[in-house]
Amino acid sequence: MNFVNVWAGIRSAFQANAAGMAEQNRKTLSVFAVALLVLVAMSPELAMAAPWDGVADKVLEIFTGGLARTIAIICVIGCGLAALAGKLSWNWAIYIVLGIVLIFGAATIVDYIISGVS
Image 1: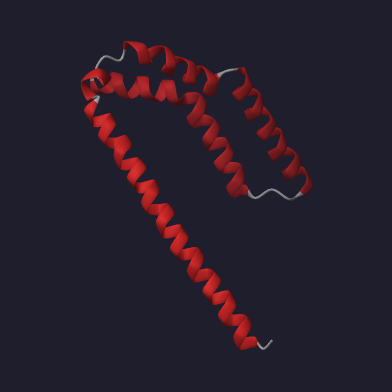
Image 2: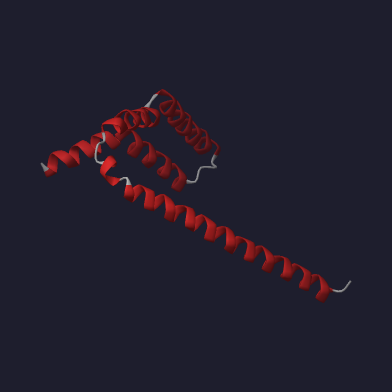
């Protein structure tokens, strides 16, 4: 078996995979289009947000609750240990701290913006 035959086999495998991925992408796009159509068709029902308030409050509690706080503390401790070992990428440390500030300060930020508009 020479190099040309191996290369031809690899090339045909990649082409077959690309064709399969194109079909999968078309199916995914059609599913999203149907979901968007259903969402638009239900828009009058979406105007009544009362059933969704409880769900939204639960999601907010998940992102700002005790578990999220514990994970944030562990991330900051990890940054401290990495800095102590001299292995800390300061870009990652800034991203982590900024993410924590945005997650836990989101309600305050939104309230500030709403009060400025009113």
